[in-house]
Structures are given as C-alpha cells and as structure tokens.
Image 1: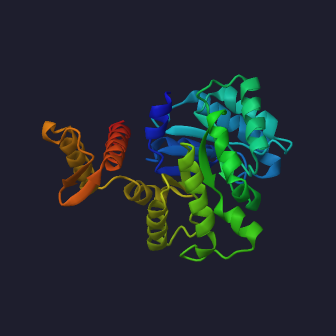
Image 2: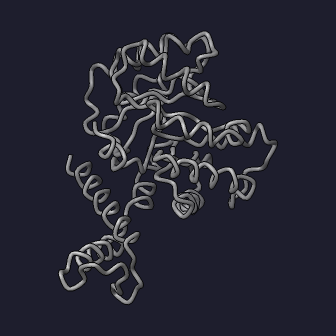
Length: 297
C-alpha cells in the first residue's frame, strides 16, 4: 500500500477485540469498524497469552474480515511474550501491529528492527501506544521516527496515562487535554495518524458522543473503542458531514475555474478561502471517497 493511500485510509473507529475470545473474533467480521485491534495484551490473562496468540493468528490467516484493517496488539518486547507475539503476527499477515507503552525513539527503532528480522514488508504498519508520562515528554523524538521506520500511527492510552499521572478522568478530560493535543501536534508534524483513547462508560451514549466530538475538534483521525455499540456513533462523528463535502467540492471547483487562475485567495460561499483550504478540501474529498469504498464493501 502506498504512503498516500495509507494516509487516506479511514480509521474513524478502531475496535479492540479480545484475542482470547473465539466468538468475538468471529463476530468482528460483521462489525462496521474501520480497524480491528485484535488484542493480546490488556484483554488477555497471563495464563491465556499463548493460546490467544495462536487463536488470533489463525483467525488472521483464515481471513474473512473484508476491507477492515487488521492490527494485532502485541505484548511489549520487554515481556516474556512480546518477541514471539511480534514474530507470529508478522507470519499471520495482518496490516500491522500495535505495541504498548512505547516511551522512547529507541523502543520504536527496536520494534522496527524486530519487524525487519521477522520478515515484515516495508509497508507493514507499526502502531504504538502513547500511554506513559515519558512518552508524552519524548513525543518529538518518537514521532520523528516515522521518517526512518514503519511507524504510522499513535494510539492514545488514556487509562494508563490516568493511572500513571494519578489524574481523574472527568467528562471534559481537562487533565489530559495538553497531552492529547501534544500528541496530535507531533503526529501532524511527521505525517502520523492519531487515534484518540477509549471511553469506558459503555452505557453512557451521550457522554461517548460528546467525547468523540471533542476528539475530532482536537484533530484526531478516529477513536479506539471497547464495544461494538460504539462503532456507529464514532463513524458518524469522524466522517465528513454533507456540508463539509459540499464546501470542499465548491472550493476545488473555484480554484479550478480558469477565471481564478493565479489567485491565492478566493471567496467561496461567502468564506475567505486560501490555497491551504484547497489542500484540505482535496484531503477531505479523498477521505470521503475512501469511506464510501468501505461502505460499499
């Protein structure tokens, strides 16, 4: 997959599925999530790690997930399961792996080198969890790795951040707004996808939608989810609206009009519009086309 197609791939909804649960792995084939995160880490008890690894890798090899992006969340390389998780994941052939608790550039390079040694292709994706205070302090050096490694995606681990910071998870997430926006900023500086953390209160649909909206305002590309019931709302919030699409089409048409040739600033539907808005309009239309491709199967 080309770098451009990677960037335009929708990752609105990234649903964690427990690797130890065979029924969940099968059910995932019918859930309209853009990305499935098949979890070998937090969702799996220590005595079930090896069995879960085998089950997940067998499921990935068997396929049947359609156009859904498949990412295996491994255990850390510093655990007794991590190295074998990585090797088995590469052999199974998902789109990539998600590594937990990455806090330094050295760890990113170690993961990338391990992927190369395991035979991963150049377009195999490395996703990493940003979930420690040290990872926040090292965001610049971590994100810079995207230019020389397979690193493509940040996933915010807000629950782990809350624990390590001894902070409270309030509805406005005031304790985490700095960390969240720092991560988005670092991601944008180096062309990395940024995925927001999970919302824990499954039954609180209004709170979930509000947090999705907050994440989109911050600039996140999508959100990690812990229950299939959250997928539809997440997909809606992180999709371009009809009004957004219409405005983007008008912006592209205005700059393509020969009468506007050479102009750097135009008025489109009463709004001052610059070349930078044209670039964003093209990105939005490309994303909308990619979303429609997923919907059409």
